[in-house]
Image (cartoon, rainbow, N blue to C red; front, side, top):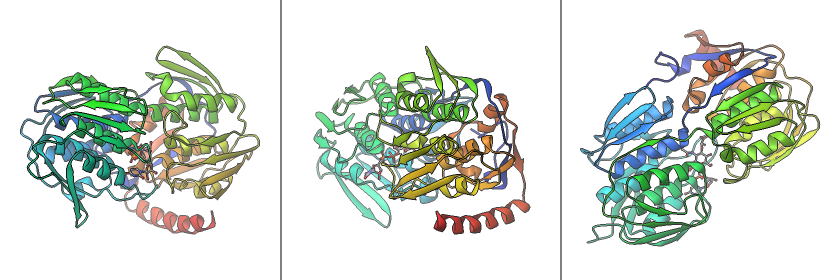
Length: 454
Ligand code: EPZ
């Protein structure tokens, strides 16, 4: 799978050139959910039979996960947005660090590999730009299911307790409703002996999508999407076909872009209930929202300051905190955004301030004084959702912006600039070899200074 339209992207030498003061109009097609497709690919390891996944987004993260599965001996057939996974000849071996580095979702394979083979070795996923990203909830839950786990030289080695041939069901209470831990434990428990109950489980739509596919494969999972999930282990799981749900975070990003540019657009397909908290805040801030089946239309009007606290689903999603902050930079009044999920998810603040925003961060709470306008400039994304926030800010800015760091953006937004240009945005991807590196280096130095100031 390649990312973007018909070209293998050499992401580090590219930038998006955006002419500001845009109005969006028309319809945009929402792709399959990155955070669902990744875990569904991991779940395909649970069966020897074929899994046919449709609506898989063309993203670099998906490409990375595909390479990880291929490294384990899985056969992948890809055709447009369809992936056929055949893990009949799966060979258990330690995943090389360079393959899993930078893709946290690769760690979610541990539950499936342990359930199928009784052993798994996966490098520690490590932290990233938004936080330390611990895995204690995954480890504690797998131990409760009967796994022996040691961490040696940055590799997590899991095996079954001596003489046991399978994992066995257990009552597990998560300390925090971790999405990844819930997914890991559901996959592990699906082939365990007996019943597993996961309390304080994450309720995200991507977990519901995973359970829907696992139940199609013959699993017995009840109450997915609730705080308490029940899994009755089965002997084995068979193949199935499954369509990935629409990406609620991509959908929210486009809605926020429309609100910020006082535009009217329609997005589909979406599952409106997945966006309830976001739609509520968009309406509170002055946009008009219309839901019709699997499409949502928004009419961006005034932009009033609102207060937001990110929370596990069905609360306001942390993945839309940065894009929504871009909207609040030009709101009337003083808004407040509290990031309650990740400890370092304010990387966009320094650059939004560089564009003329007025944001002060204190204890992971951003206090934003709305300004009349932003000015375009050279920008560098440092994580996926911060990069989306910078693009939104560039759309409303007075002049030209160049957004660098596209290796982040291309992880989670399929054909982002193509979709924006179809909505009327004056945007294009530029390929600058040599010159780019100097520009990015000087930007990074400048940013270092900014971050200290913010
Ligand atoms: C998933 O990450 C998503 N990634 C993230 O999306 C998303 O932001 C996050 O869930 C929260 O919704 C994928 O699904 C691939 P968590 P995950 O475990 O599972 C703490 C994006 O932009 N925690 O729910 O890693 C952790 O520190 C990405 O698309 C523990 O303490 O998130 C964090 O504070 C970014 N111990 C909180 O839970 C653990 O063992 C939420 O993390 C695990 C997590």
